[in-house]
Image (cartoon, rainbow, N blue to C red; front, side, top):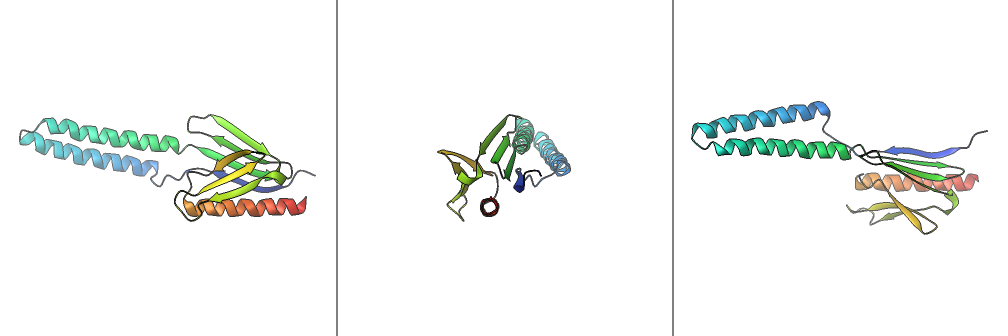
Length: 156
């Protein structure tokens, strides 16, 4: 008989604008900037044209940075043997944290506030989960993980 899984979640940041929407937004911004630039050139203010192109470039770079940070993935898995957290950052670097579930404690700091945090502590070490989630999602994560730990402890 294999080990029982009490909690298994994959967390990743939400990006509300998809790839198609991004392309359409950038095309619209470029068109508006180009038309505005042509107007400024026609009245003799040709240097403005370059600045209008620069703002489109900066918006593009900001969106790309946001999409890169959206590649972050956290997995949280609770079994009879361990509570394991694995994090793969935007650059592909991986880190893992593993503790016996009987010693794990889930805390929700500043519940209901924007800067609330879900922290799992054990043996003097801690890890923050889902920092990229919204406050209601963090609260839901903490409650679900606490309930799973209770189920695991009552089963053991």
